[in-house]
Image 1: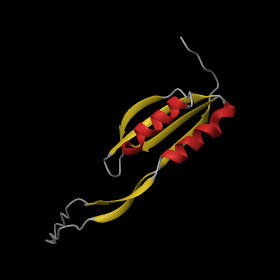
Image 2 (image 1 turned 90 degrees about the horizontal axis):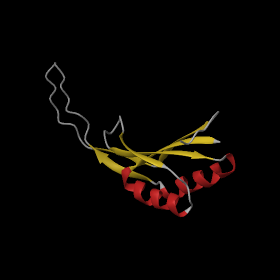
Image 3 (image 1 turned 45 degrees about the vertical axis):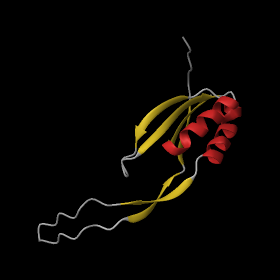
Image 4 (image 1 turned 180 degrees about the vertical axis):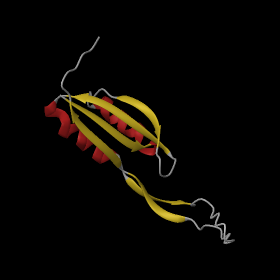
Length: 109
């Protein structure tokens, strides 16, 4: 048995959740926030048999897409007097970060 933690962008979460339901994959869905962009993410916690891990990974890969987004960095507060306004920069967001971990024991009460 494996434990899968999948962190996806909120824009992909509903589609992924529906795909899990269609494939009879049980998942716990948590609202989370990314540290870098401070944007909304969804973390799925999935306990799955070893022989279904590739199926789960395939569904995540098909539904979680990277995209480009413009962000504005924090204002420059340089004490030397340089008060230039920051310009928006383009960064890649989305996709999925997935951790697959072995499970020593599983109990359902």
